[in-house]
Length: 158
Image (cartoon, rainbow, N blue to C red; front, side, top):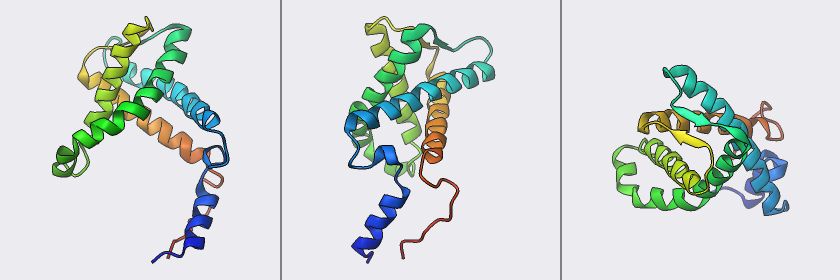
């Protein structure tokens, strides 16, 4: 069994300063929003570079600022519900179905963006799939980079 002091010390030393419990929730959301803005820019560049044409259309200030905000909200509200509903498929595919759930979240963000006249459009499910992979990779890399000691020695819990 893990000692409680060791576990709390591990959490305190590995959590980024902007994601600890004593930081207001609005600051944590703003940092995630900023990371998502950068992830959208990189993912758009990557997907449009892989495909012929432009399967990802993201234009203007509202596209680069409002669409990631919608993504953060949908990711926080709808994604857990989708993961719960798709639990049997998650078990059958050994967790790989989460990639499809992420693509469905991106498609839903496109639909919600249309409601607010935001310039964010995706042509097809596979473009949304690759876009979701790129956004996940960039936000993962940024969150690892923003940790206190991203390249420091790893501590073992046991």
